Image (cartoon, rainbow, N blue to C red):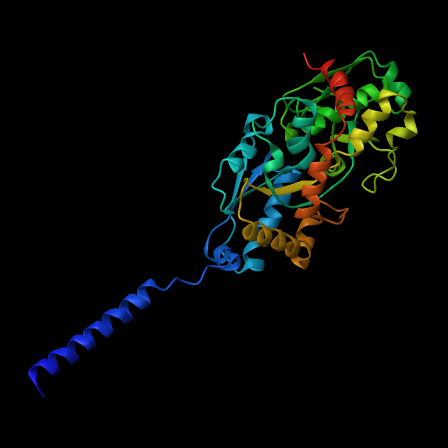
Length: 348
């Protein structure tokens, strides 16, 4: 073989090898699916609430089934209860929008009420969060300490003084408590703000306060410890959580502004909502939503969650939570103004 031909053949071989390498290295990798992404990465759940409260227990119950349902890594849980119920919300909002940090909180008290009531709350638009799903919805109610001498509404109205405790001024329990005082005509009532939710039952046991408002599920859990007893459900119908406790409309007939207050209260019966930072990619948000749905139907999860939520109502999908949130935050100003005016009388 002539030298020139040999050189030419070697050159072609080298060129072919180079083109092959370039072709292999420049070929785009197959895009990672949301399922692969979440299987290969750790997702952290931030619980916006107190240790041992229903939000904490509900969040940990879901987290315990994350790995089994997704085939991914175990979900660590981080409890954040500072800032009057705002710390956890801010942490999720400011997290990287990749779906690897999610949160759980109480829907109405932390997501919608601060906006509706123009009270201290998150320093961001809660409508921008991504909604994964919600469970544990229950009507709100008011409980009295177990040894309180008052049995009827007339007894309460005649008492020289009644002290109710609650959390921060922008919380759902605070709104519940103040609205109940107004609707029941308790002119002798005083409200002490600043408690953590898990402190209220202890404050009742010590005789420091006479009662407080919260969701029926929270009250049922606290009542099991013997420190309180349910007094009234803040709705126009009784709740399955307390079939023997009267609805507030069994005690009084709302008229005028009271009708607006009651309508707003009924619309605020939110549960434990799971959410993401704003702008999480649609495919990842959808994966989180569908995984939530699967966990909600998991027999193991339903067994674990039953002691905390013995009355299990159908969970809401992420899409349903998004629609509910938008509806609540679009309420006519006249209705929100009515409740704001009532509430301001008690916030000093």
